[in-house]
Length: 283
Image (cartoon, rainbow, N blue to C red):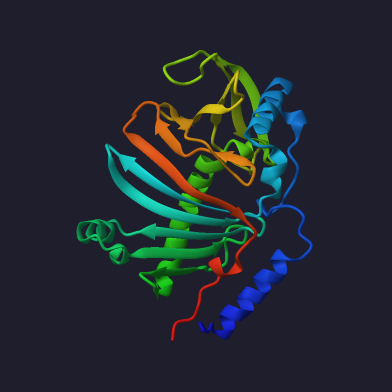
């Protein structure tokens, strides 16, 4: 039997009561509000609605309580990053796991997976004042390092959950949509053309600008772009899979640098698992 400290049990009970309480919507922001369609143009909203229908429906996304997935980042055929996320979307919690790449290479060389050393962070995405928890290779990290590691985990979550599901978040509270034209067929994307929807955010919600290029025929997002100082950074979405009634991309390829690839795997949709977000005592 694995025993947990009193603190761990109290935290688990608290989390469990929160998960099973009266919540009816996901904890995505400190002050939740509905998407305001009056702030967006009707053609853009219609394009996003058609995309959501093709993806499995906005209702499925709204009801999803916990999503977990793995991501690998490769450049010129070499894996640079391997991380795992568990996102308790319903209660605003996050578990982040990152492999030490030196240990990964050692594991490959020796053909021994146990040599891989993982770092783990567990923290609250809504109440960011909470300290959170971190460990490396199964041992808690020093208190002084926890804040920095949780900051790293949050940074990865902000980027990676958009790569996984930005298309579903296109009607989040504070999002403003604008139809900005059509993208003609180019290489392997936008066959038959794409409708381009510009995504911005109300003050206090976000500062970035994105573009979703939605295929005229399939209604699927073929290309997602982010405005950068030097222009747009775009990624081709492909290798779609269906999980929990929703479609998620399995690969994102940099349209300007095809050797830069993000792969997404092991996507799972489930009820919140409290013990993913609560540290266990070691004896």
